[in-house]
Image (cartoon, rainbow, N blue to C red; front, side, top):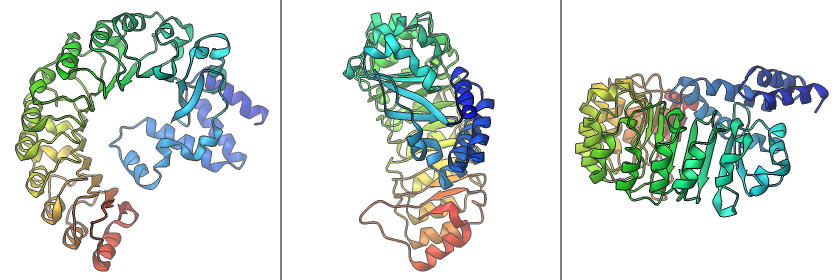
Length: 422
């Protein structure tokens, strides 16, 4: 790097919330024959300013998916000091955002030097590698961190209290626990701590907590607070827990809710539709929740669905009847992203989507592995609607799937061009 590069990079590390030095760094990269990395920085900054259902997001998912992952610029990751690792890196706004914590070394000695090397604001802590998880709460440099992720830590109430009431969590707005990352008692203690009302994002994935105890722990929060994103994916939540869960104040006021990989079934989705949880939601993930036709009917008949912009119904064994309910729902007019992949949608379901007036504003439609033949493909290609689609996925990964014939293939390409994936 030149002196000018180094000066800008130090400015980015010193003030990671500021975009101006990042954009200046991109300009300098382009001037020095690195347009690919310059474009990556600019694209990620632009993406950070819009929601995932915005046309820019959708278009980028279709034309440049690596803009979200950064694998093409992984070679720019610097060497980090002992106790850290790039084993699961993540870029945000064009630069590394998250680093893995491997050991106690990260919190002692020269561990803080990582902030001079990289503008990180997130730590992924895997307790299987035995770092001092509880000691993190007393680490002064925690004050630089916005997001913490824990796995295998099984936070108990004592450790959760130390972290949740640490004086160094002033910037912390995102927390994630997965793979037995926290116990039921630890979660309740965290919910009751001083940091919880400031959280904007909470992810609880694949934790070994009985669903009833998980819901009871979340019930310790009497008000929604600042929380706008909540993931409860893969927690064995069933219809028996749904009524209590969707009545919680914590769930009212969310913009993004992920309930994927839970056996909610018909009764659970009906409870969701009847609750106030949907009001204000913009993104709803119901993949692998098995709502059945009655659950889809309840969901599509509630006016609260009108605010949802991105709906994931993938892998739910939904056939043409359920798909038609979505296509004909007036409450679906607000949808911009609809994922029906890995469902037996079939040709009649594809025709219902193609002829839908309610889905005229749709920007993305995912029908991957949806059991379509040439008739369904032609219905989409000849649709009077779907003019605004920026991304149409028709890729099938099944070894028994039929490929589209030449005429259907040509019709799709003629209608959608590079916006369709076949």
